[in-house]
Length: 398
Image (cartoon, rainbow, N blue to C red; front, side, top):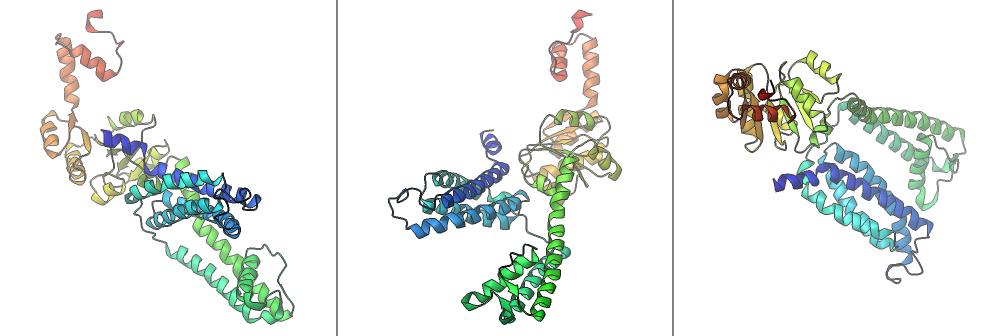
């Protein structure tokens, strides 16, 4: 119980929010330090031990680290392993920047970073999803890289026909020209001076802006879809992979499952797994957390986090299917609490042999009613406990 309580307190979601907090602190302290000229006083917190140029540089680069951390936090939200590696390195860099900035404001950044880093390391097992880009995403990324290479190499080769691309920094200036042109910013500090160079600049505009537009659409569409899915009550892979101590409801029965879901809408994390297309859409319209699939599919159960689940509920109208579901769930997680509903009282022992911890049968209600009618001892108290209402009238009131 203690370990489960600790897992509730420090979950993957808290780690992500702390990472976002470090990112915002890094951006804020970088901007503040830049506004102070990177001084933090006459000699900084360490009496001038950190050189002025280092403090000034750390102010600028600290802001960049903060923005990069925001990007990696999005990757953490989706459970990517690469995002965990990047976040771990960037949080450490944020702490180093806080030290080098040498201002009173940067102390909060140092403390926040050092508090987040061990939590990231401790929960590294929660971020194991590999990046699997689609063919479209790969093509969009290749188009952006290709257009930037085309513009940079072309501008450098034609540097004699440009005003502002020269000297030792010609390569960087060519790249700068390509980025500001393709992004339609166009500061005008680098300009083509000959018709041929102007024609080349127009091709950079067409190819660059086109590739940027396609890339933004391809990369941000899944994020927007996930947001709409969440608004419509649709559980996404990203949401599932961050769940801990949640409840898995495997299968759907007309009698019991809807009551179960009504009890779970008070804020509990749960995932309902059913293998019925029409029923999935119907439940999603009611903002239920539903995943379409076979409740006995081991790969699916692993994907919905049975190894991290607090308990499993199985209560459909088919005892045979339920017994197989209980058996599969128990094999995948020997420690999870499994509660099952048996339609036939004779199957209660079979459910227990399959691995269920608690089995409830509708026949039990019938037996309780008969015992209550016959004045059975303690039946009234049990009925009140099951009903969750101690104010119910007892049999003596009739």
